[in-house]
Length: 211
Image (cartoon, rainbow, N blue to C red; front, side):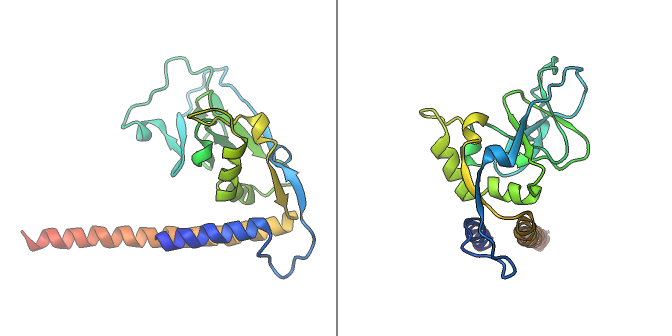
């Protein structure tokens, strides 16, 4: 599995740097900032609606709090200060984004997240999948550390996040890049499921040998 992840990471870097391009595209890329690629928002749960409470992690992305904190939901009784996230919107932990704690929420039912999270969504002319792979890339994480502030712990709030500059292809090329990376990500997920199934089967057979 490590080989697949290494290949995917290297491919992502080449696609987002413009070193590797699809033959049908030859236009020069523009240079933009995260501030133009995204829209910052903050929708507070002022009516105290009881949506599920989620956290954002590096590896899993959005995850229910009770799963992250071993069947305990740490949200208090007052949930009016929590932020509402809807399908297709992004959030990141400003104290953990430099290790990759940024994700897109893909569930249909809205959720709540801590008021500490920074919420963003793609600009109208930006492919959401293309943006997702960009924001999770090693190149982006390098910039998170570069633009972040702090000592032992790096913090990156939206004003500095929005200053990060990147190359941006046309929307058509964004679609193509995202489609390729999604295809590879799906293949990696299939391989992981097969590996997990093989391990489970192996453990079952070993147990049967000693019955």
